[in-house]
Amino acid sequence: MPTAIKLEKGATLEKSFSVLENKTANYFSESPEEQYAEVLGTPFLIADMERVCADLMKPLLKSGEVSVGAHIDIRHTAPTGVGAKYQIKVIFEESRWGLYTFSVEASDSVGVIGKGKIARAIGKNTEILKRASQSS
Picture 1 (tube, one colour):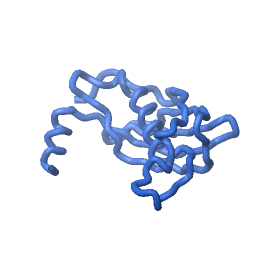
Picture 2 (cartoon, one colour):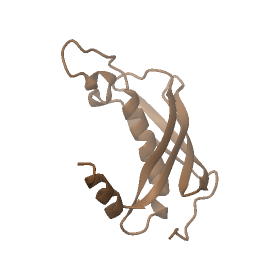
Picture 3 (spheres, one colour):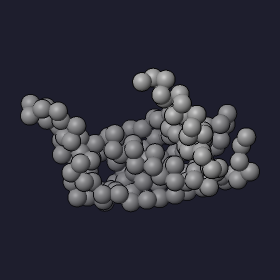
Picture 4 (cartoon, helix red, strand yellow):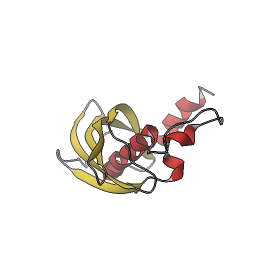
């Protein structure tokens, strides 16, 4: 049953993050021959974008519920080096068919480094874990 609390269209949340050594593209290297740039890795940027969306959804959650990612359409357009700070701004757009859609944008001191759309859903954590355990 949906919550009585609603997000208003245009609701916004902005948070700051830092590029740590364990958030770089090269952090994913599994051997010395595998080398990537020592800049913010795309999966970490997306994870932080998801985190800010989830934070904006927190008031919607009932006891035992969590929000989960359902769709991601992100472009990571510029590098950000280790030690740099970046900001993520999310704006709630709409809720349809149980999906909450956000526009997201990340920027550092030089400019925009990524943007796109993220959709999240709300579910009971026990049901999510029950389904997940079937795939083990």
